[in-house]
Image 1 (cartoon, rainbow, N blue to C red):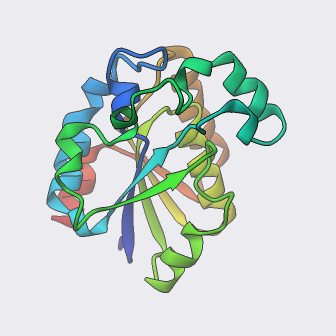
Image 2 (image 1 turned 60 degrees about the horizontal axis):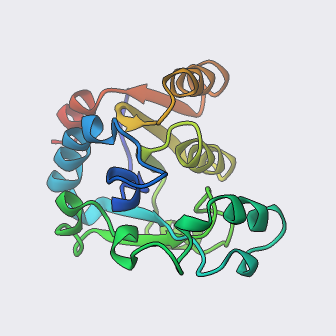
Amino acid sequence: MGEIGEWRHLCVDMQRMFAEDTPWHVPWMARVSPQIEELAGRHPSRTIFTRFLPPEHADEMPGKWRDYYRKWWMMTGEHLPRDLVELASSLASLVPPARHFDKRTYSPWIDGRLHPILRSERVDTLVITGGETDVCVLATTLGAIDLGYRVIVLQDAVCSGADDTHDASLELLHDRFSVQLELMETEEFLRVTG
């Protein structure tokens, strides 16, 4: 694996609205939480939690996002209890020194704020965990690759609501992006970083 370099743990959307009983519930988020808690707990100052924030109303969003939120109207701000956008309770206590980064799209890179922050901290490696593997984790990972980061996806610390596309996403990332990305188990990563 070699030297890790200057790394940050980018934990994708481990929020109450995915962990609890909502239309977007990801049942096996609970299965990856211990690995994420262990990594974030050992390295809170290196951890950035992204949070997916739905708009107050569907019409606030551009283009096809309006249709998306018309379908998922119950997940817009006017209907969703505010506290459900917060991090899962087991992770929320880590902020600070951990940070959170709010986004309106699957990818945290689109609005252009995250990359300059990481560059100013001389980050060259991103360790990615969270959910969902085949949506926001995939968008986060592909954006990080495009921006030139070394990417480590902790395969036992990512989850999805759909097993088939979770597996297919990990296979795709491993097979097609092997020069820029590594799949690893959390325990292996923690052995290297302490």
